Image (cartoon, rainbow, N blue to C red):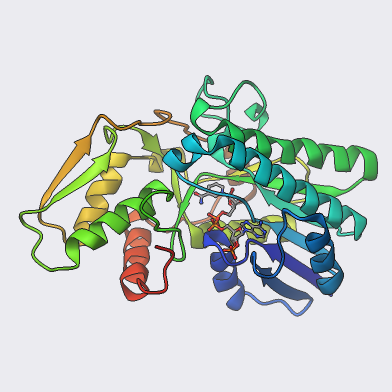
Length: 318
Ligand code: NDP
């Protein structure tokens, strides 16, 4: 029996994996989803107890301190230290407990700032990250270094995936420390909750011009489960939508405004920071393995997420 422990199991990606696994159960797998209430992965002893209790054979390591541009910019040291501690505790405790496979999460936003596009898996360490999120980026890059070390020194198959921006149900919708899609959704929800929106202004921070690839959490969950079951390499793999599916922040804002049936004006606050202009990632490696994988169309995924948010507003992370 394979016992799969999912750290960060209460978060955006973890909840999506729970959702997908409900309909894709296998007899030889037992899945355990844990959040910070089950163990503080920043603490070695707490991590050790968690592993001793569940005795996993496989780990999907999602737990991390995660935040949007503005939270990263003001807390780089916290992002660096908290993530380094969590990652080291999880990987080393996995090794000590003979876990045969670990799949950890990097991110396309940790790539070098000055780089040629599209970025691919070979470029993770080719230069300093963008100054806005250097703490998060360096902590994440060290996962890949550690994976190589665990392979070289101990023959372990500890690997990593590199998702682009994720969105979906159970995201963090907090006004100050959320990613762009849940942040915009939160503002639209507040603007629309009293009905008439014709006289209202929906302000989007930044110029609206930066380009991003967004993956629906349910699609990412399917791909991470595939990596756990089928992808047997230490080398990271980018899990992103195709390059043609890249969207500008303005396109995202317009899609959200339409989905909320917002009738007012959309304005761009160009005094706010834009972050990197683009970070287009190539999913060519993924497509070699899964040429026919169908990503959920963006508008449909946004609609499902908005519907979920409206229905679950009271329990959502606001
Ligand atoms: P969330 O912020 O939604 O969830 C974070 C998870 O980590 C929660 O389950 C949280 O537990 C857990 N956690 C945080 N601190 C601790 C701790 N000290 N001990 C134990 N658990 C802890 O994250 P996402 O689902 O968005 O991200 C999952 C992974 O994907 C992360 O590694 C992230 O870096 C990566 N990623 C995310 C992207 C995105 O756009 N969201 C893009 C690319 C990569 P609890 O809720 O119970 O407190």
